[in-house]
Length: 255
Ligand code: 13P
Image (cartoon, rainbow, N blue to C red; front, top):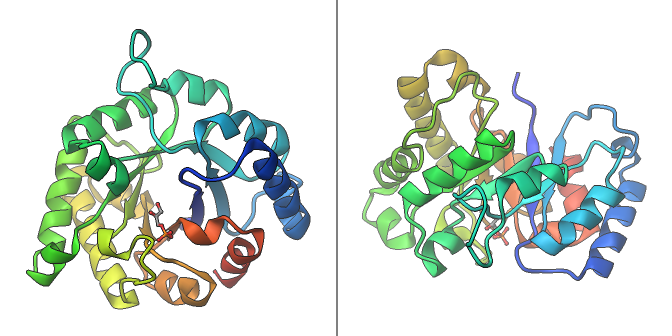
């Protein structure tokens, strides 16, 4: 059985002071996560890099996981502004987002670069949360599934999966991010099923049945249960609604 995962992508938000308060308030509001025992819903927070040492300190001993929003495809060296997978791992990260549509769009990241980042993350024991998803014009042209599977295939170039637990896929339709528009539960499930089918054809049944597929794009307390009801939707990658302890806690409770 796949364990549901709700991952909060904080994007470029919060000072270290605000992050410290969020973590403390979250563990107070969700005491089941404080003691480190396995919970029904896995929770992870992906804050910006300077907040990771705060996460490491505040979340120590809890079952809340954390990680970065991006990672370099290189090991080490003269790459100003980049962050190495080994640095994220040494800080106790579990996950790292790769290929978020904001990085693909504003930093022109190609799927090949995304695949190299995912590979580097895995080499360092991190679980990449690999994002894929179409823009509105692609959906309107009826090509959402075909486009997203092509993007996924290219973003998995050279990636070998043995169990399906080494990587998470997040389907984030670009038109639903930060816009208040969500894909319908049926559209999210259709895409998640197509992604699982692709994974099955490429990596076999075991990987396909273990790999977790998240939905992302304007998820909030009122739509979480419905979106996650889809048999192939294993959780969410949550932007805006993860910034407040209240709304994020409500989402966890509704799963
Ligand atoms: P919103 O939940 O703010 O729409 O953001 C989704 C997202 O991009 C998560 O990675």
